[in-house]
View 1 (cartoon, one colour):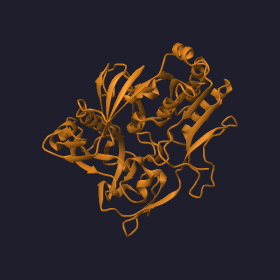
View 2 (cartoon, helix red, strand yellow):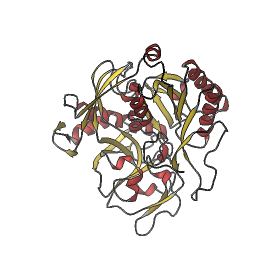
View 3 (cartoon, helix red, strand yellow):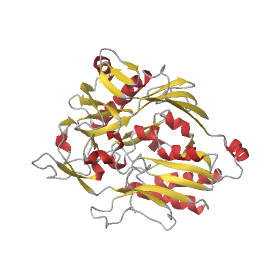
View 4 (tube, helix red, strand yellow):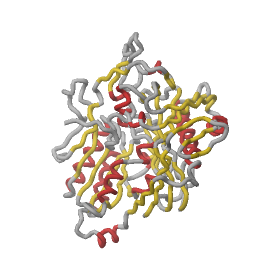
Amino acid sequence: MKLEVGYIDIRDICFADSSRLEDGVLYLDKNALSEIVLEDKNISKVEFEIAKPGDSIRITPVKDVIEPRVKVEGPGGIFPGVISKVTTVGSGKTHVLRGSAIVTTGKIVGFQEGIIDMSGPGADYTPFSKTLNLVVNMTPVEGLAQHEHEHANRMAGLRIAAYVGELGKNAVPDETRVYETPSIKEGLEKYPDLPRVAYIEMLQSQGLMHDTYVYGVDAKRTLSTIITPTELMDGAIISGNCVSACDKNTTYHHLNNPVVHDLLEKHGKELNFVGIIITNENVYLADKERSSDWTAKLAEFLSLDGAIISQEGFGNPDTDLIMNCKKVEAKGIPTCIITDEYAGRDGSSQSLADADASATAVVTGGNANELITLPKLDKVIGDLSVVDRIAGGFNGNMAEDGSITVELQAITGATNEMGFNKLSAR
């Protein structure tokens, strides 16, 4: 499958009387944006703010981050099965509004929603302090159930991202890259001497509000299967969960998965990137056994020489991670796992809830329990009153001077298990 991606660099965002993209500047009409959000009668009010790198702004609680994209040529559209019709994507031509993001916030849904600081020490721990952010602050109607509130927020964010992405459909990209992976037969013929490597991507699916969607289907309703790298770039996988902010894979992470991009960079040179095995993370033991069995079976079927495995979340998903690792290793296929650690604030506790001797190659995104003090910023978008209740916060963590102390767990993307950010540990 072959996809041409045109990257349009966004230099600024501002509000205007009409929405358009000119010379790298996004001009956005608040009225048009409001109409899109308020299509959903479960949302009673919406406000839009712009947060730029270096601004003295704190955004919390963060629900999702989405990069605006648009399908220019080829089958399907962005976010198939959710915003666009169910059509296999990943081929043709797609434009990306690089450097911009849609950030959704509002009333807290669960306790696992995070913080983005656009400046100060917290900004160093989140990739979204470096993007030009359109923040969508939504208020639900009274009495709305939590899962309905989460769904309304998620869908509104995706609709806004699709609307903004359309503004770049006719723009001339600043950079164009072509991504292509051959079929299994073509790969064997073209790269007979290169090691065959796949990426095993674990998707969070541990129950209500802990969901990931594949072509619009909740991943908990799927079995392990194969997907091509370019399908991810068109939004075939989106976030729909409220796991801890530090290692939550937002929709932005799925669109820009760094494991995929790194493997594509080495494809045909150092290795043969065969494709992606997606598998879910489950609550019950029987479901964990079934999914990990299928993952190992697919890895063997693809005649892999190696696999990289990433997870999302911690604790219970550590069991899925280790099951996948040891079963794939048992097939004679070396693995490298990507995780993060919950090793206590002093780093002396057990890092993972499960372990196995076969996990000999491990990459960590850092210790999520490490404490950080975030100074008071000039502006808060969202609701600061919940920072003692979100995962990583605690009672009494707000000081009289306006600063807050939290674990890195509370910062969106801080210890991402795709290796998206800069933090690690030795």
